[in-house]
Picture 1: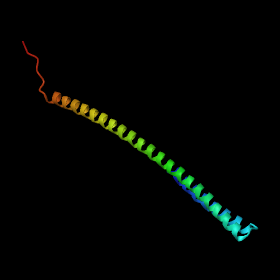
Picture 2: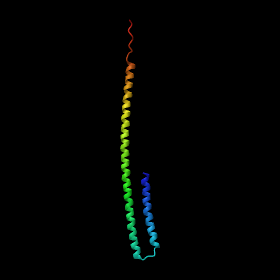
Picture 3: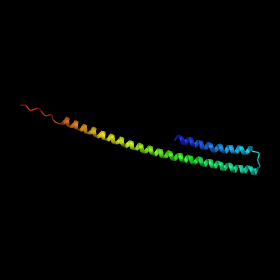
Picture 4: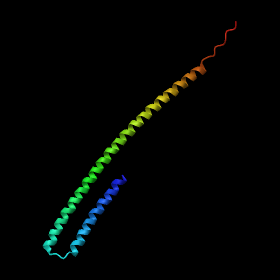
Length: 115
């Protein structure tokens, strides 16, 4: 979960930094209006492409995280079922032993025959 937050913060910083850098570069560049518009257009395309790549990377990471989470959930479910079955077997065994001891305690003791 922390990795996705870190990546989201990185992506936002990347976009904001790119836009800020492009704006500063354009303001201080000694170019004509036509050249500036062309440069803005090129930079926008570059930024769009980089953003698309970053979004695709984020999507792939999210898919991988989902797959791993699903696998872990299945593992934990399997382990939990195994432990529940073991506890049930032990409980039944203890209950049977308790019944046997109770029957033994209640059963009248046979007296030895006097002869």
